[in-house]
Length: 232
Image 1: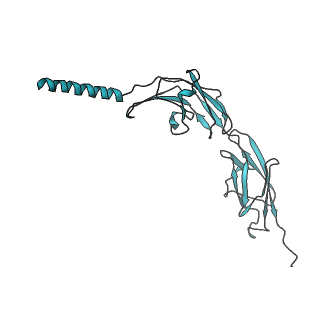
Image 2: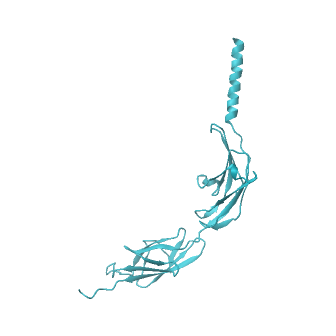
Image 3: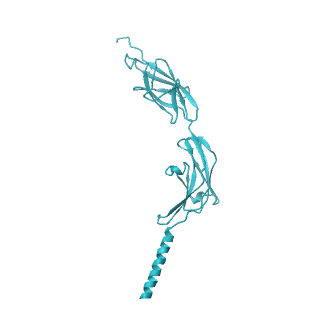
């Protein structure tokens, strides 16, 4: 009986150690990452990331860096590695900024309780925006029906003196939509949609400057309906 208990104890310890060793995983070797360009335009430039193969459960490229783990992680499958050595992934950024892309290699235990990660050295990618367009423009309830992007002109038709006798068209607050990350000015004054007042008794020139410094101008004209004098 004593011998059986002793053998049982030894077997139990062995199974416990074996079970723990099955659940624990070691940190995988690191992959490397390179990119074909270090700067580009948001939504326009296509980047090619190249990563090396590694003996790991999963290999993931993080184009926006380790600090943005939840954004745009790209899982690289084993079938993507040409000759078993490198794989390429193409990617376009959807926002401007300075990013530090990395590749993460991960080992998982079968029960998912043990996870070990290794992160590569980062590369640096700078993304800017060259968008400098006004897409919508309105005065009160009257929206422009004619925004000519080529000519850079905006025409808004409004009824005669729609703002009353006090001020008329001399202090009108326009509402507009401009490209993301751009700045809009009139005569050097920063414009805020629905807040900044301008004298529209004469055409006004709106300048839209993109994040990368390129600018586009729009001449905004209010076409006021004449007073009806024929009482019919």
